[in-house]
Image (cartoon, rainbow, N blue to C red; front, side, top):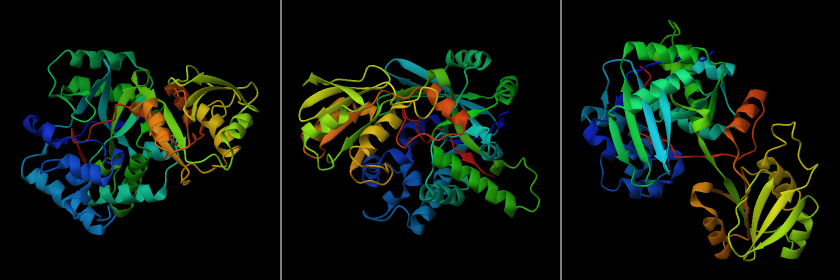
Length: 415
């Protein structure tokens, strides 16, 4: 069963929310954060990307940077830009993209559930990124940004969400960068709080959709604090970390595409011939061509788009990993032909989230920066859940969720 609890969120007063809120720390670099924050002293980037408070070129891993995050977090509270709620409660966070709205419950999940596998992951984490987020959690003694969970569809919770959606939200704004609508409600009614807690208790699993490093870091800090407290009881706030939980069927997963710098010494003709071993290759001309189904890929090379359809026998429908298009393309194109075997470290490949569109792939190849591009059909949420349930791990760079969670709407303090 999934253990969750309400919490006393720290959040901006309504009149400040649009000055405080920001994109997640990991979707932009330091220069972009510095430009977006500008002269806005209330920008959450001053806590989540605190290197922007220092001269350009300052490492985001400099100890002074973490200390500045904590200093600014306290300053935001002292100035009333962030205020803690008086009562433990849940929150509802809705995002609307392209006319589609998804409703999430903001809860505190239990660190032990992560350790025991009740909270299931589908990606590997890197220790250096875990350590970075652990330092950020430690120094602030808070989960400043939430992780992103999915849960199996639940009629009872959906009815509650729709009931709140019909009321006036606490926050309601259009984000300046993504152009999507973000709404936020507070769930303070004791009966509703008990209902949410009970419905989650019935769930055998929760699934990390996005935020594997933040989840791991939060759980590790929670475990550290348990060991450091000789009077540990198990109900302390540090045993929990903040997550936004969405019904699986509401989530939108976009394609996560690849661009490569070279063809491993092959000419274009040799590369296309090599592809024919495992794919049916069809020239689609110069108009952008998007994959229409599983096991179909779109290749952009020398100004032409090609449809690549994986041949029977090149994938295993009974294997939750082997059936994935990210696995097929990694094995049969990137590794076998191009000899790009480590997607995490190779400097010969880059990745482009589907929100940018296939036009971005074309642009990067036409500019000469890249030699070819490969577009994939999106992974489904059911595939992710099947892989997590099987205990297996997806290949790197397999999923791209949109819209991204905005940060700064609510923060969870570990004390």
